[in-house]
Image (cartoon, rainbow, N blue to C red; front, top):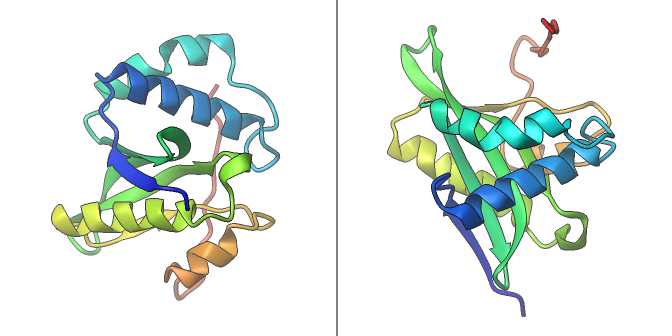
Length: 156
């Protein structure tokens, strides 16, 4: 039986920083990401830039001591609830560790942190063709009423 542990990311811990960069880069290369590795400039600057973002909170899942999954999150604010929220910006599980409950454990850690911080909700965006949608729906995420869509406009 494999031992799984989820910890909050400490970007000053070199093991955590390396795992965040590695898993984020692997996620970027996945078809559910961009299908390409992170550009060199992003790889060189990601951790230092995340350290500058006070709203960042992340969670790493380890299986038998090996980094297996990651949730990169950011605190936001709901004007309709006048309260903070947590947005799961990236959730990724390395292919060799999928179907082990890691995604569920990461989401559980985010929800727990949100409750501890008196957040009003946890949000995320998901591609229509992402198989993880089933997990998110099982964990209680919905599209809202009325149905909400996440839109984007690239500025660079």
